Image (cartoon, rainbow, N blue to C red; front, side):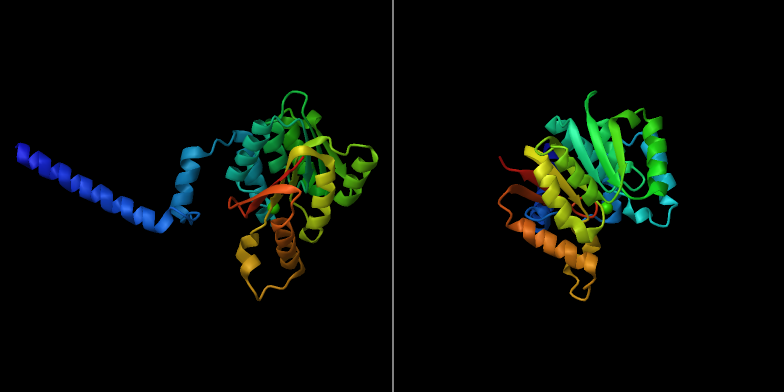
Length: 247
Ligand code: CA
């Protein structure tokens, strides 16, 4: 009996060690590639999406441009970042139907405040309906104008250095211009999050010479050596670049 237990134990150890070895060989020093099943698992054990956000995501999912909406786990991650920073004043460049703004606004303190930039009346009317329902409409100032105009207006209003957090997720050709303005509007230690920096993988597709793809490539290359920020490209969603403004 005792012998048999020892044998079983020994074989379990061997099994465990062999699994550990294979895990080490394949995954320990690189970002894990998520299979659909592993992605489902990630959502199942960590996504805490409120019913209102789920309804907004589902309503947006019926829009032909639904791919412009961020992934729910990314929204949750951005909410965590904002909470972690204790951010009070935040910027959003590119609202679409308001999912990301809602994720961020929920994480703001009572006196928190967001300036949200977009040009689409139609999409932001969906956003406003959900912000209202969430009781967060008061916190979000929507400016319907080209975002460069809004960011320049904020600079003219002497808001330079006042914002804690900015999320850039609008037309890709203007990414560098949005980034430069957001960097000025941020306080030292503030964080810029930039969406779609892996661009569905097309950043490494040499055949793709489209203006959007080239703009993201040149933006990514510029950031790599931008000493004004501390940098990380987080492979969540479609790639989320985090750049923290140095003091
Ligand atoms: Ca996006």
